[in-house]
Length: 479
Image (tube, rainbow, N blue to C red):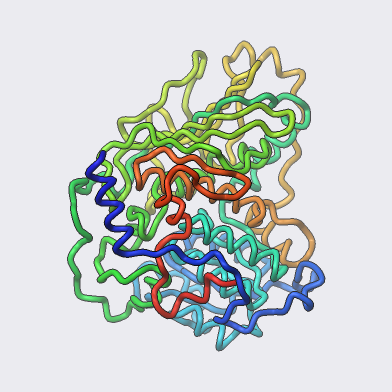
């Protein structure tokens, strides 16, 4: 892959500089002073949360309805860079008298005192500025997964959540369902212990599978839709001319805007493993297979090995990620049927289609093997005869007291603790950022967990900070 790597290096060196890691107080808003934040800010326990929706189409539509039907919030503002787009109209019809904005910054300028919390259901590259603006203004944040597009952006978001004392929740909704409580109970009972390896996979078709992997440039400019605020849509990312293959979910395909299959699905498959095994950050990330690698959008298939060291009494763990239609991993003997998880809401607007091996994972320990699906689906011990032998020893798993959306709003009221706050979701998202970086460069990366630096590749270490933000957006990188 030498030629692709060379192209990647030239593109990066031409388009980008490392963003400074120096941190200062943000200039983009009048932030709350640390002295005014003795603890977590909360809405009154007896009041509904006044919620602003940033991104109201597609996935934003789905989470808006889920949050609203909890009965715990009032919708007080709508924001989307294209308020005339077909996919925004359902939410507008639901809340016809709610103020509307195309620019989240203008929304805060006009309505900050009326807003308690926001959703950020926007493309991956915009999670960061929307979230940083909200937190600096003392607003609680529900942001879709993954948290952000670069390692440093996630780092700053974690620092911001701590500094401003707001409630945060990443939108991996299965983290409030059965698998969360089962994994916790089984680990505490010693059923899940001494994990040494995990296989994780998402082998469904992705949007870019229909594209030509041999492209050598971004698509040519198209006429800009008159209703789209393209400048705000681009946000921190360097200038790109408008093209329809950048919007409406297509952004996920491009390194400059999205996080590919790993960023999209990793948080639904690896979340409990990462949290309850206290994995933190890997020391090695190795893309062992990349089919049709190019520097613009994601490979047609990828296999990425993440290696984690010993943690206390827990042994080292290797996690191997597989995506792509021709890259289905082997499964252990006695695996049985691969079920579709009923909790998966949609994929590109439609229900997921069954495959030979559906999205999920296999967990290998020194004594037991587990299989699991995606989102909130629970684990099974395999093979079946071992599961029947273990059944009398399995602990009772408590029911979830609230789904992910109610958990966030109840946390804003001070009644619960968020299950996927930035302190938990951040390191998980950084694992995905490191995996995507290895995909882009096509190289094994060695990572120092203590200093949070890549030690074997100076360019990759710079790319932890991403490209230089567009003029006018620099202040979001200062905290």
